[in-house]
Image 1 (cartoon, rainbow, N blue to C red):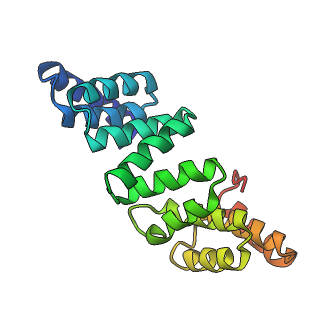
Image 2 (cartoon, one colour):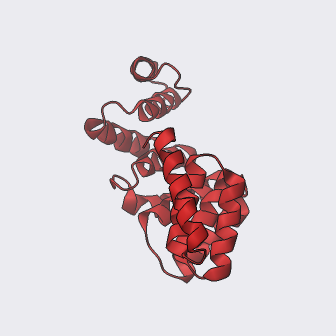
Length: 195
């Protein structure tokens, strides 16, 4: 959906919500639209209202964690995600990825790596492989990171972000020829790539 379609859907669903203010499923869908439109204050208000109605709603708690990450409240996000993943034993790819991301932001690379392994390459979380490669890089496991990145690029040959990561990895093992090749390819695909 483009921004106009998202905005129209948001307006339509908001009308439905006015008629059915206790509908947590509708609230959750509106929260996703709030986030897509950058309406973080509205998302927070909708999350709070939803959690008043259903304090244990997994989707709303996950959305609250996502909002916390977007707002740089990493500790809050980590706590919410640990609760969902470990205490409630909800092993969903999105929860696993988001928890790993919050841990990586706190330089807890080994725990993040362990969470990402099972979902690396999963079509539901395509960014998991990129995050795993970055964790391995920070852990100094450069050869493993290179192998995973190169394998990923076989299936995703236009992933400029992964190419940028691979360029950095080759730089760190002093293979400047390959580092330059991967940097050049990344910039050909995405001239604004800063990786």
